[in-house]
Image 1: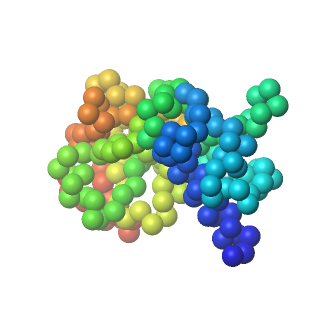
Image 2: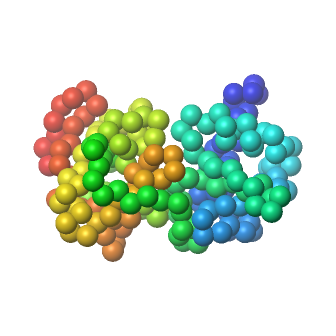
Length: 198
């Protein structure tokens, strides 16, 4: 395995652990989402890795998925967004009040039928993810086939709130059921520019 493949695998392992698997793996995770790097390196599957490996992956991650910080000489790491852990409820999020950009969710044709009927769901995560415009670095996958633009004003008036993560992804918890209903879709189009009917 070359260095690039190695770092991609490490990034995926860290994403899973910090977003979804920390509690299951017996790691202590704080409400801000931080876990001690040395605690991670003590886990099975991470023994061959070093602090320098983790630092490199964080520094070179094109989507800025992670944040490192030191606290009392302990190096901590967190995922900036994407959590399903209920314990992570105090991320450093900024309330979005007057966006000067479109708020867009990217999805796929095989998901569209369900979304069209039921709205966008946060599923097992704490938030639904969006991008600031067509931003493929933060919030949108390049493989997305459908772009859903949110009617921010209408959603805001109805009490829905949107937040910006530290790496520029827009997050919304949805309503009490974790749903952003279809009535808040301003427009829907395919990646080749075709409009889709709601």
